[in-house]
Image 1 (cartoon, rainbow, N blue to C red):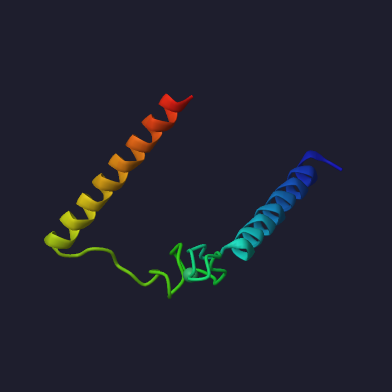
Image 2 (cartoon, rainbow, N blue to C red; image 1 turned 60 degrees about the vertical axis):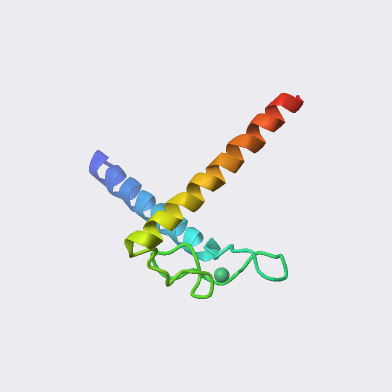
Length: 93
Ligand SMILES: [Zn+2]
């Protein structure tokens, strides 16, 4: 076996491995949103989205200026709450 053959074999191995990993990832992909039962949604997400069609996968996000600022405000509030919770936890220890 010469070097060329070894390289060819190795490349084939790498390609098949990459293909296998890609398939595994696709298999595992689930929406993961919290359902009314409290469990995780197991529906396959839409292509190029992380959520299924029932949990916002079709959403295009805020489009108008009002909508955008509303989302920004909600995010600010959420991060503020998170920071507060984190500082409380740190002071507990
Ligand atoms: Zn879902």
